[in-house]
Image 1 (cartoon, chains in turn blue, cyan):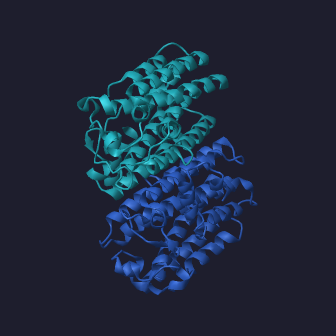
Image 2 (cartoon, chains in turn yellow, purple):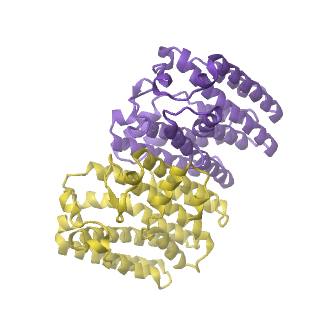
Image 3 (spheres, each protein chain N blue to C red):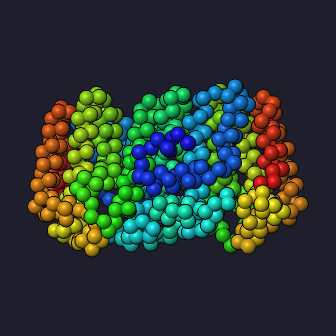
Length: 274
Length: 274
């Protein structure tokens, strides 16, 4: 990625940042942002920097989440986690650097106006910060080894993974010129999509294929984590997912978006096998 | 501080953020920003949110620097460090939250224009990020137990502490309407001020009063850290500091600022005893 390669940073720090950025995730969030843009207008360079920034924030969150003091994971996407490949200090700093760089990327974009940069900075920092993703990670850590109610568990997901997904979709729609009532409807779509993503994640941890997933299944069972299948049963989780898929389609109709990829995403995320 | 008290965040996260923000530092950076503003215009609300944001970034950096994987400090300003008072996971998240919140504070300010928010976001993220403060912290960790040249050591300080000090002064001057040549001269002042701050820090670690400092002296000697007195001798360090003080005064004359607090800061930071 040009952004990081061109940085004048200490070699280890840069390597560590690149290691995780290039670890090859699904790039779900940038793709969602572009899909939301396309739902309202033809795709355009304006979405490039916001999409990169979002992926940097997501990557930082994975690096910090994997740290020994947090989820203490040794592998991610079939590769050593950042602190295992480098060391803890480097991983902490690489995360800090990626988070900070995200705001540098947005504010330096040559493709969008000042008002748009301010909107995106405000929305991204709100989604990722102490009332958003970080709050979700905190609640998630506190909930370890506890049985949660469906409501409390959903709240954690809405914050921990849902907020960045919501940002992806809102930002794309906003940049493409969606009007306030459309933004509201698309926001609802985004919330359901995040929940669908999480339910399917939980389902795959029970019935998924380890090779396709690139991670061991059954880890939720082992960690005594609250999941949709544990609270609702496997069938109940599937029904909940289908209910949310229906609601996501409804929200798209209300938002009156173009046919296409946002519709397909509901099925793609709801029925993915990895 | 209103900003954090009013957040809808998990209690532990909020407590941990507040603990460090309210730990009562010198507030050097916000004060410098206000002083730089006053050097060009009468003080004004416009500087409030940028100053708060800067202090949040500074506070996050202290929390992460103190972590076991980093400098592993148990006390800061005479109080337990954040991870000792709470735990490591909470301290990592509190730091992440404060860093993110800084960009929320700037982008939400009711007192400044979109163009100004973009300027500040860009400058702050550059100063704090992978080419700025985080780079300095990385180099500092790598330099532990090594004898550095004067040049390498200065480079670390310019990044690790100098960049935020530079931002403080540039941001204040910019918001007060300083013109490009003035901004350049004030930038030079800021670089020297950062170095003066660091040299005096190193000198105080040799000859300072533990009670006034709120931390043990002689810790640099113990940690085999490269310092100005070690490289230049105590007298040499003092002479270097005086040389930089003279250059800082010169830069202020070139910037043609109002008489007053920016001048006084040179003496205050150069001759402080805590």
